[in-house]
Image (cartoon, rainbow, N blue to C red; front, side, top):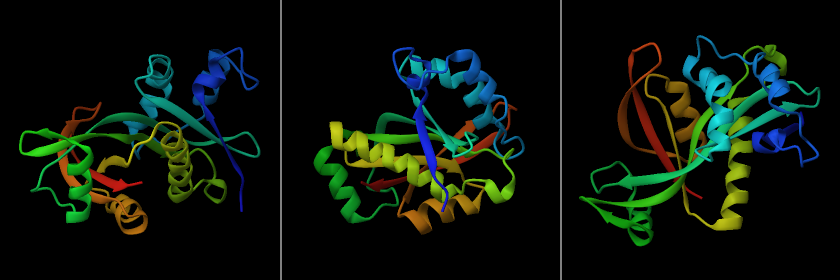
Length: 202
């Protein structure tokens, strides 16, 4: 079983920490990351937006390295509103939980939740050494559990490309997320895509 090491990029950019490497080296590390053809927008976010978003606390990005100091994957986490209505495809148990902790919003309820905003493995890593989606998700969830311990929270959610059935398998079939809605968006290439929104109680 491989060991992985997770770093908040804020710590890598803070000269007062013992893991400081600075922005120049950080961007050099980013240059070896690729998920082109898999999700170009996720690669673009890491290379062009993650540092700015972390510094502004809009979303915090975490880098995952193996024992050889190879960047094998990354994810970003942010707290965002989660809005669920009675017509969404969630169980009565989940809806009652949101109703109990949330606020009235139109015909549903809104609450704060941890959003895994980006999550991707590095496809430049050879396949035998590549981190799995499950391992990366486990690391992201460990960060969320730490935040939950420190500040509370009961929900997390994720958005994923509805056309990629393997993502539904990973999140919903294997990790107890429940699809509850969809939203339409446009990628950097200008193509319209549908995102499934999935949540779970933590």
